[in-house]
Length: 252
Image 1 (cartoon, rainbow, N blue to C red):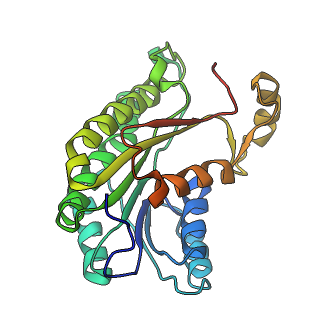
Image 2: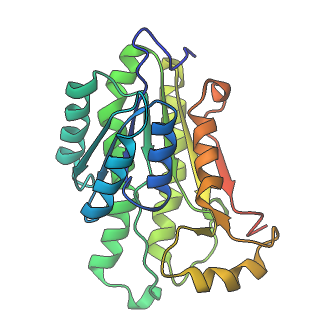
């Protein structure tokens, strides 16, 4: 596979869900390493502006943020087209967006059920469809999708059923895309976090959860960011179709 540092030395990353949590961490990490970063968000406008301001403080980095619901294929295509006009290419796509809710399977609403698929699985498909032609033309690219720890076990999940099924779908789609795009010098991998402290209101719940994690503590955003950083690097050129679980051993 060709290095991401091609004739145009600018490295461009496109991140969905880059305004908060893990997506924010990835955006700031890449910007700090000289990447130009475009990210989308749905509702967190104030957070997005803060991330954008931080990116623009990084030497050699540029930032671009847009409010967009990329579960709509036309919106996803327009977002990618906008980035291509702005910077000419996309080296890396990180499909980080993925809302979550907890509700018993028999109490789930049609809207909630459909929403978990529309917002966790559909954007991965639409965004990849949009960036793939450019990556194929250049003969290189990196795509990282977000699953969830234990999705590969196909276990019963009565309280997060729709979300869980959507993440299983992400893993299958990741492997399918990896096989399809490998010949073009493009890798497609999944990162599946367990319990990660993103400074959300669930922090007290996470503290009690730590007792059930073999590592003895809840993961930090940097634990996931460093994994994505590696998958985007030239050192990971031969890793394709993998699912890297970042969970401290939770679920083993």
